[in-house]
Image (cartoon, rainbow, N blue to C red):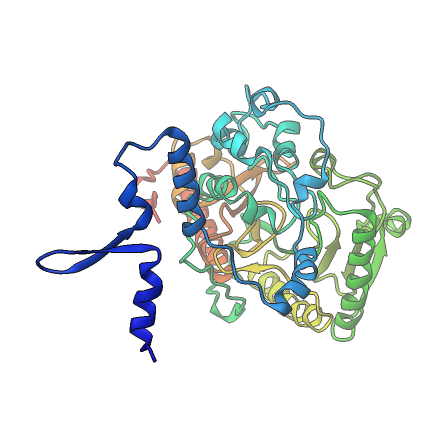
Length: 448
C-alpha cells in the first residue's frame, strides 16, 4: 500500500515532470516540456491577468444567517438624504451667491471652493447649505454696524455635516478655534460670580441675562415644520407647568399677548424683522408662546430664535440676581426635559448647541445698560472693548448703551458674566476720568 507522500508524488507526476539537478529535484508542467519558450500574446496576457485577479480577489464566504438577514440589514441602512431631493440646480459655480457688499462672517469664510464642497450635502432633515447661508444673504450687514455671523443651522447635524464651514465662522466671530480634543465647560453655579450687585446706579440703568437652548431630535426654528413646532410647544407646556409649581407663572400664546394689558408690556403685534429675515417667523404666530413668572423675575420664550430662551430682566441693575434666576431655572428645566426624554442638545467640543453659531457654547448673554457721554466718542473705544471682550450697542434712548459679552464659547457661563461685571465697572471708571478731562492711558486694559 502506498504511503500518502508517495501517492501525492504519483498524482503530481501526471501533471508535472520531475527534473533532477545536482542539488535538488523540482517539477515543471508537462505542457511546458513540449511548448517552446515564447513571449505571450496580448490575449494571453489578459487571460493571465484575469486569472491573477481571480486569485487576488476572493469572494467573501457566505454564511446561512448572513444570507438570510442581509436584505433586512441593508434595508435598515439610512438612504442618502440628497438622493431623495430633486433640486433643479446648476453647477456650484453657477449657483455661487454674490457676496459683494456682504460684511458677515459667512462672507468672510465662503469662497467657491468651500461652496463646492458643501453643495451636494444635506442633513437627515433635508437641510442643505443654501439654507445655512440664506440669513446672511437676506441681511448682509454693514461695514460700520456690529459684526454678524450671517448663517444659522437648520438642525444639530448641520454643525457636523458642514463643520468645516461652521468651525471657521465660529473662529471668525468668537476668536475661538474649535478643536475636537478640547471640551467646552459649563458652570451655572451663580455663587462663583463676584460682584454684579454693586454697580454705580448713577451710570447703570438696568440689566438682563438670557440663555438659549434647543431640544434633541427636533429641527431648529429656521427649518422645523408646523408639526414639530406644535410638539415643541406641547413639551414646553408640560415642562413649564412643572416649573410653575415652584415659581408660579403663566404661559401666554401670541394671541394672548396681543390682548394683554399694555402696562405689563406684553404687546407683540408682529414678529421682529430679524425673525422674518432668517425664516423663523414662518406661520406666525402659530405655536409661539411666552411664559412669565408672576413676580416678573423670569420670562421663557418658546419657538422664537431657538426652542427655548430664558430671560431675566431687572430694573434695579442687579446682574447677580438676574444671573442666579436664569441659572436656577435653567437647571430645573434641564432636569424636567430629561425626565420627558427630550434633553437639551450638548456637544463636547461645542457646548450647548443652538441655531446661531453666534451663541453656541453657553448660549448666554449678559447685558448691562449704562449711561455714557464721553467714552462713546473716544478714539480708543474700539480697542478698549476688544480687549475687554465686550460688545457695545446704542440703545433707543440718547446716551444709553448696552454692554454685553461678545463671545459665548471658550469660557463658562460664570466667566463670561464676570467679564461683563468687571468690564462695566472699568468703563464707568474711564467715563468718570473723561468727565474730569483726565487721561485714560493707565486704564486701558491689556489683552485678555
